[in-house]
Image (cartoon, rainbow, N blue to C red):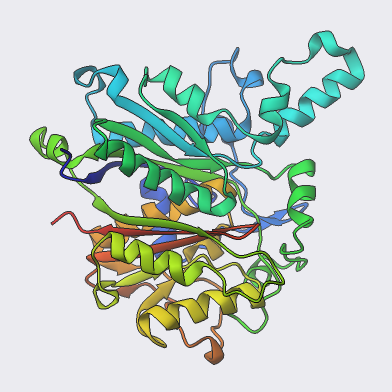
Length: 395
């Protein structure tokens, strides 16, 4: 029987750093990576250097999949995971999927329009909506165990990590989990703007201001993180460095609008804490979803007040420096939470001036020194998805 699921490897590729160390240095200092790209967004520049691929594969690989492959390589290297000692059928991969395949789909449409159907990939219908992250990663690293892809928007990355924990408990030895997204394409932008939640402000430092009276939406970004999740007993036996333990997870769905029923976020947080056997007073920091919408920010702030009391726990949202990364956003927050535990430093929420009515102890301006042994990460996806993940120190 598994002793639990622990994270032994972290790989991050984000607008503020294309390697975990660079990402963390920029995150804890509050460095703003949002900039104009037609309109403000969190873009990864020089992708060829950040996520190189053989020339023959690059034209066939979606941008989001390239990001996921780069993050997976980092995570496995960080874990020092000896894949040859683990049977292939006991190592798997679970990723969150989003709108990353839109870039590939757009290229295929142009090929269809200009040269005809003979030049269009047979995988267009799949790649149109989802980057084939899990499949490419599983083939590249001979991961013949469970392979999965979850679609729940920004919440998907937490759900993927929750699923990885389940797979470890069922006897699998190693699971790569997380997600990456890259929807800064014309079609991806059009899809995001249908939600009405994207900021129309063209000043990057004023466009994404969660829990601020000037909030007017969020800015999109691209990137993500993959994490190596292992059985704790096996990880300790091989002398692996353990970044932290996935102690609890829960996911809920908001009721249909107009029913008058309460949103499901409080229930997701309470169920995740119960799953971790964790009292709210034990939580040292919350990495918030931070939607940037006054209504959604109010729902989240009220949920935190209901569980922890007004101002009852430090809250941060470092994603304000890189944008909301879709399927890749929550795994990046998990990586930041684990690095926060290791260094005892809570990264700040950039640009935002928290409004008193939200009753939050929001970390802003500068990083805050703190002994962090337990962290809660919250993510929500468009359509009512709620997910909460509890991380515990390895000690």
